Length: 330
Figure 1: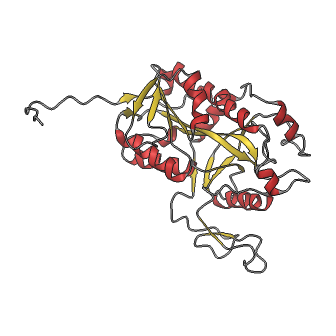
Figure 2: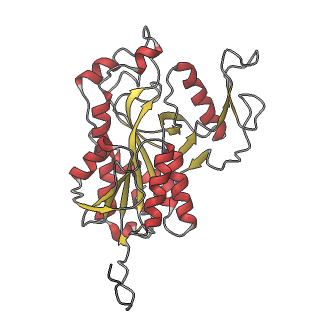
Figure 3: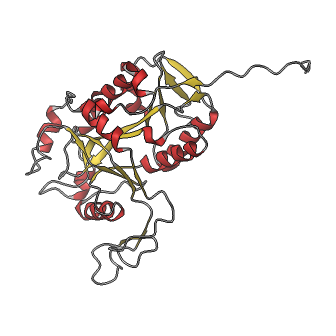
């Protein structure tokens, strides 16, 4: 094979400036963003999921990546994007947007929840409930804690994150009038829950999200989820949605921030409810887990119904947003 003659180094393509990066976890979550925001430019990035090997962008400075589902995929894909240095994310707003399960005491099918706290449900000890000590109300306890009620020392440093309050309030303000999608199947299913807000139409809410690769289900684990969020946020958080990725994605972004690649004060997290996390009266947990509730399609649709006003506001008023969250918005 002929060798190329030595010469001046080829010029490096400068990183592409990004105003908003949307992070999805799997294809159906990504599709509405790609279609509605006309993200018709594809940039391949080594190290992304083989199922989603390219970032999608448009000429307005909006890009979208799909990580693949679960903690490992979320962290690996986010790190690959950051260290590809193909994108200038130093002033970018990052919107993590995906579907989730929801506590029927906090929302309903199709509801859209903006998070203040990201809490990891997976970093715990677990003793099978059939073998747990007498008097314990749960077989879960924090690593380093003596019992389920004890707060652990948070040695992993990824157990809980608090998002930027100004950005959270801006996102809530921009989406408060969003017209959420609903469906007949979802309406009929939620009517089996006796209390509001579970039996009401979906709306935009603020409550917090819990991450963990185990796709758990049921009222008893749900009680532990509520207690865990309360414990790790010192009573300030409110458990609402359950998903698999957000703490992993945020930790990857936090490490990118340490390298000067991104700003975590510009990260927002939106989760829309595709299912309830526990059964309605007269339903078993197994039946609830496998139920066709009609929530999936409306949750997918409401990602953009609620998230797009935020993205569009940033792009439209970039002169104001590039320096930080404008005070007038929140």
